[in-house]
Image (cartoon, rainbow, N blue to C red):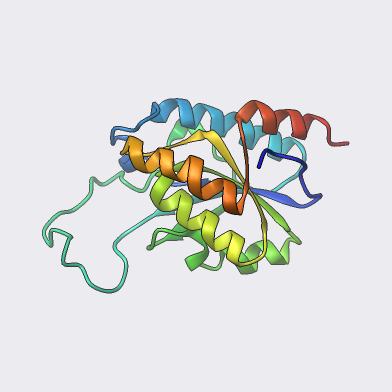
Length: 185
């Protein structure tokens, strides 16, 4: 379903636009995703709407059979891309699982009165899709900016965009979202 409206209290959730993940090859150019995220975040801030910057750190608790025990990410793995233009007022969330709502994000958004979330970032079929599913299950109105997400795998990216997101969220382009934002008072 295409974007229809933005609730009065809508938050932007930016997933994993950090140096370590952006260094991986994506279906879409990760720097294009960062550029779109920056423009969208600037508009959210302009309209006094919350911007949430999510990063992934460490490893999840539980089985680690598939993780090489001695592998260590580079020192700047968790650093947000400077091109994102993070601001001091942005909410910062660090997660250790795929989805951002495995943290205190839900409580923080509810404390702000947020009823809708707009989600973008990487990877489409991992961090983004997990966060979209969790937000939907928590009762948020969910929107995904489909030209501001990317994945390491074209098939999983396509599956999320065409099969998963339309069932549990509204979807649209950066331009569609910016147009909705421009109509706000």
